[in-house]
Length: 306
Image (cartoon, rainbow, N blue to C red; front, side, top):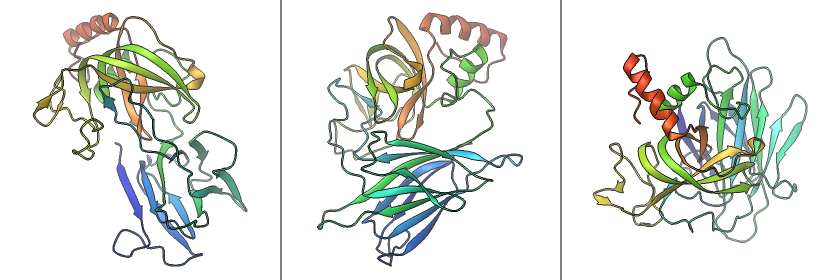
């Protein structure tokens, strides 16, 4: 089970939690497995305590955060020219991991590390971050926003974040098909190293969309809007259909040294920290054979489309 939550922190008492003291520290309890923290007009500091839901026999966990310095692009888009074109802004806070006797730096705008993604582990079942706002400069509206995800240290099934860059087994392929946020046939048309995310960003042209889940955005921004998919292979926003080619960015850990490959693949990806991350990508003809066999056996977790 995956829980989603967004915490809004605002100095105005009518909106979320309240930061009332210029130098005060506000505690925030994060009890979900993943979510987004948005700190509007940051002043003083926050102490974020992570208490994600874990199996009864597990105690420790790993937390990854990704600071947001510019808006994420849509999950799916039509134009190949669409990318992260906005200039990255300075993140208006410093982040520390709360240690036994001291604060350990995790992120600072001027620490010389271009990565927006940082991770740490809990200690004796406890994990806390101290987020200190930078001094205010002028009247510009500032937001300190980051996404977080807490993962169990025990690996119970295939997880792309912990896998050793290997192909999926047949059982992993089946599980990935049934549970991924994005499932589509596609052709890899480009790859790019993303130093800020520590990933290789694959650009895919989708040839047969099977399933995609996406968050809604402002419908007035027609070209940049996110898409919802009510039924298989139907691409559109509301009642409008878009005959143009549909593309997606899917990320792979840099250490896997992924690159563009020829031919058609079945892409299975899950959304993590705001981006699609590859779970499995068998060649389309190999998946077709497996799906036919598993469906005939009647042992699949769900109907395996091909």
